[in-house]
Image (cartoon, rainbow, N blue to C red; front, top):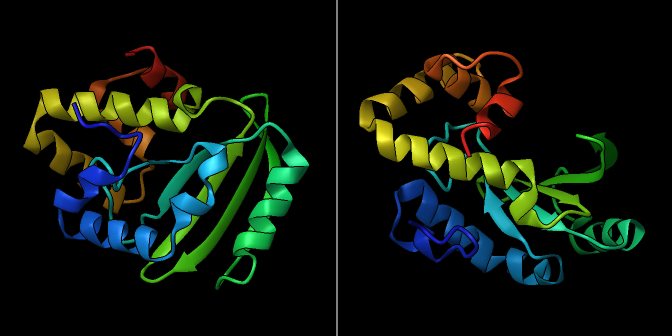
Length: 173
């Protein structure tokens, strides 16, 4: 299985993955976030991205205000910079986005180890499903995403999962 805790696998990936690797390295994004255990999650690592897909970076913070200020100070001068705070699944969450090169970057931080965050867990589950189901299934996911479906609802639809797709996928861990 791919070690998703690093981005080394992107170097030998498809064109978009290699471009993502170059962008992240050129701007030292993960290096700048290193104290927050950053992990690239989402669709680009598992090759189910569409043209509008962003680079999602999950982080773990211990001090919300310090994380918020660090993100603002470090990336606040980037094109399209935004930062907000919200509650997701009962957890305080900081979400920031900005543009680097050809990518929108989204930094998602919670006071939970990245490996326990939904984004990382969903990605691993989806990766395993894609490995089991094969290329035709991957193409069907991409087709649904092009039609406007979010990733987890697309998986839930094709797998016949009931209820909240984000929760239903976690039942497959």
